[in-house]
Image (cartoon, rainbow, N blue to C red; front, side):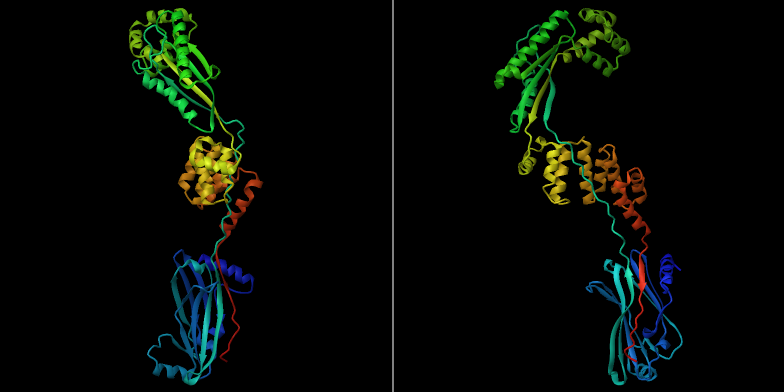
Length: 483
């Protein structure tokens, strides 16, 4: 006996019925058994017991099993069979061309009947019925009944694994920065700006391009522009102080006049000798005496005399550094600090999202999402845009992962969850991720770590699915209209 039959036997024995061995005298049926052995088939078997019908000589009953769904919109007919009294049996044998399924009502021999059907989804909730058409001699009809034999219930419980989107904290001040480094060239020992000198058109464009990006944003306002000028260590220290400060001021005035910015927008700093940059270059290039050079740079040797001493200690390396590294130590670092307008109107937020999504904060994206029905394509699209704008933000990744799971894109959801950080919300999302793919063991590992208030519903749903076996309820027809 297979596992399904064992399961059914236990159930129906407790109800006074047996899963196998069902006997329906009116329909000459015994040992009815129905199983769904795999995802592709449904098997129906029984024994036909003609003698149990006690038909009169001139009676004939055609029995036509049928499987039909609850809505009675889908059905499939099983092979029919006919049981006849003595006179009708021999008459039919002589007059019919097809007597393969004709049985004598007085026979005591049980006849096996079985059929295997291709599984169709509608069969999961359906009924096996038998239509019985009775007649007497000369084919005179005397009865036409339809009675159920068994009810099929192979519809497993539906997983209840709700997706929980997390509301980001409200951003009151939307402050951002654009920063970079420009290598503006100056003639030796001079501080005047020559826009067309050497590669200056390209380098100056780095700074102005960043400023233009902000100025062309209708929702942005520049707060400050910080310029920090660096000089290389060679030459007298005081001269480097003058060059670093003077060149930074010259660059500030150049930019200020291009845009007519007030002087209060600018913040300037200068570093006379970029020893930090030199240290980084030495470590990156892995010079043979790199450790000793770095140790000297980190020492408290007086900065005014440091370059001369460095040249004395490392003459061979110094010549190479002077040629290839020192020019890169003469640079200006710039930082454009600006703020973006705070949006409160949802329709305006949605409009900005279509053209300038980079201007929205995560809480503004969240407000836009909640203006759509939960689970709609528009709802999910908002979170997809949000994570593109904030690819490193855990909340953005978590919410986008939920949307990916809703669409069934579990590979995308995995990638996003891996960037969503830690916490109860993330553990719950991982549990849903595994549960929705049927990996309940992995899901439970995350649920076991969560408080019951957050995990109980999903745990209960998983347990119902785990315990579900599917089943068949055998019914007991009562009619015998042809007697």
